[in-house]
Amino acid sequence: MDKDLKQRGLENEAEGKMDEMKGKARAEIGDATDNHSEHIKGHAEELKGKIQKNFGKGEQKTDDAV
Image (cartoon, rainbow, N blue to C red; front, side):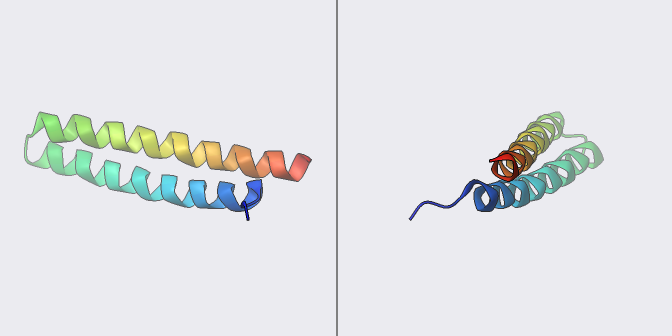
């Protein structure tokens, strides 16, 4: 059985928050070690997490509106 939008939204939001936090930590480690590649990869992962988190919030709002 398919999950409803609210459940999928909650999962996407939680996964997005985790990716966002991991990316932020990776970027900070890159800064601390003066590793520009890790810094950039960390910010990319953080951005991906923010997008997924906001997508999840949108799914939940859509489910509430239906």
